[in-house]
Image (cartoon, rainbow, N blue to C red; front, side, top):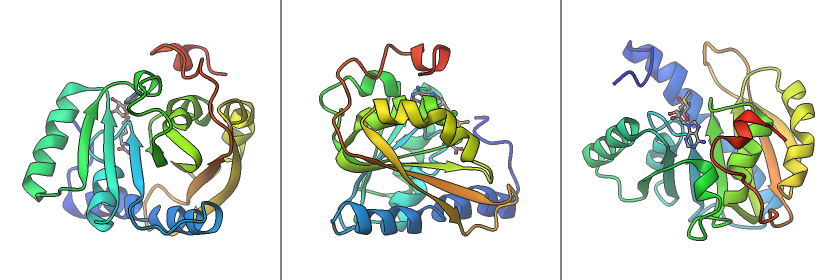
Length: 208
Ligand SMILES: C[S@@+](CC[C@H](N)C(=O)[O-])C[C@H]1O[C@@H](n2cnc3c(N)ncnc32)[C@H](O)[C@@H]1O
């Protein structure tokens, strides 16, 4: 299905599974410190989930979380449904669609405690994909490479326009051969203005 270039089991474990698991501590630590909430029953959306990374792994590791895998490509959604069927997980579901459309859909807009994204886009585009889905008082966590400062500088205005601010950049414990990984954590403190996200395709063509 051309879901990943990595086919060796050990490499899948390091590059994908461990790397996905590594963002759990930054999520839970920030949630406890800034959202004044227990980390039980977190309602999380993984935007651009692809092969289920990190969302499917988070659903397995955190059975009391409710996870939505948001993915625009049909064949990847078919794979995700198949994988969920095989694992028998009941705390995860797949939604096929574009983040820009779901962000304007009142069933999803500002309904999630946490949005995560890994390897989907640069931060200023991701902010417009992810933050409209996050409730006020919730978090957006982007899994990034070792030098995310420039991306954050570029994205600061977009993040603020979506009603959020960067809380911190957390170095992530991972043995990933990608090298040092960072979780960029944003806290949403205001509602996202109604005009965002813009039409599907617009955030990528004309980043804020
Ligand atoms: C490079 S893959 C990364 C997948 C996975 N998160 C990972 O870490 O391996 C990016 C995925 O995001 C999806 N995607 C890109 N833009 C999207 C959007 N606007 N809304 C929903 N999904 C999107 C693509 O279809 C693709 O499956």
